[in-house]
Image (tube, rainbow, N blue to C red):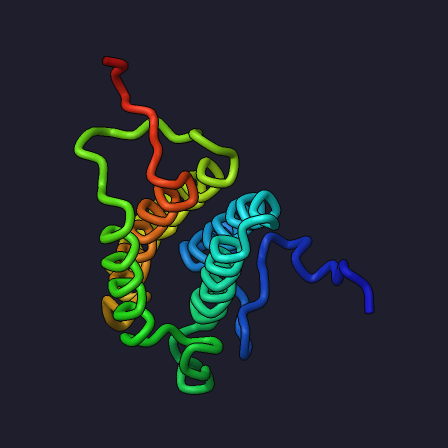
Length: 183
């Protein structure tokens, strides 16, 4: 099997379970942005090999991004073919993110001021992923407004995920951070 198929030379790409869309379609933009976030988290994970707790947590999030990406790469007419938490986001996934946010903020209280990313390389990579997830969220909002998403579950997931990545970055940085203003 070759990596290149040449089918995309016309500016279109195939969706899971059939159909083609333009490469600049909102759906393609959304799942491509999710892929970017996953890669940014890969930078964080690569820097966390000596910290298995955070390494494994970042890997867990990366795997969830594949679930989200698969759902976004499938036309809604085919969502009935998707599997919960394998290729379809579930409300339970949102609930787990909320639980993890609460657990991490209990251990690493939220800063009361803006944070300058970059205390440590892996934390900076998680913060980068957070901003990329926010972009994916904005694209999904546009999809939802155009009736390309049947409900708001993916929006809730992305919103919670970006919050989770913020607190995860603070945890990866061991609760230390640089304030926007030095005192």
